[in-house]
Length: 102
Image (tube, rainbow, N blue to C red; front, top):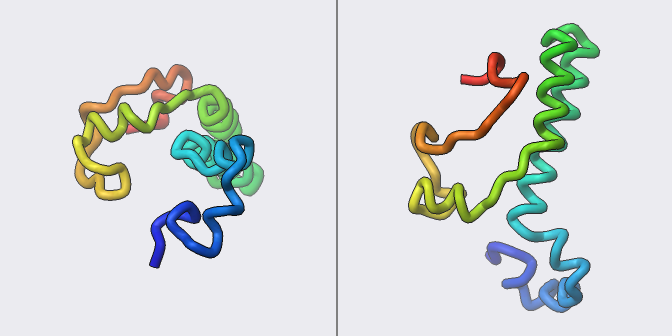
């Protein structure tokens, strides 16, 4: 089993141009996760599961935050998919969302 499309003999040639390759970077994956979390927060607020102000703060923070995958790896000193335990060494300025985080 291959780990990425680039390792696959069947799919690696599909991602040879630079524009397509940028869609499969670690940064792009983190960005997609954050946008999903923001959309989830808005959906939860719509159904009354979380306060609307919290949802808007989460969605805004998810759109504005910039996360460098190399920093995550250096903090944990392992590959990100193998990270376990608290992320107390990793600090992010959360702004208005800080009161909703631990």
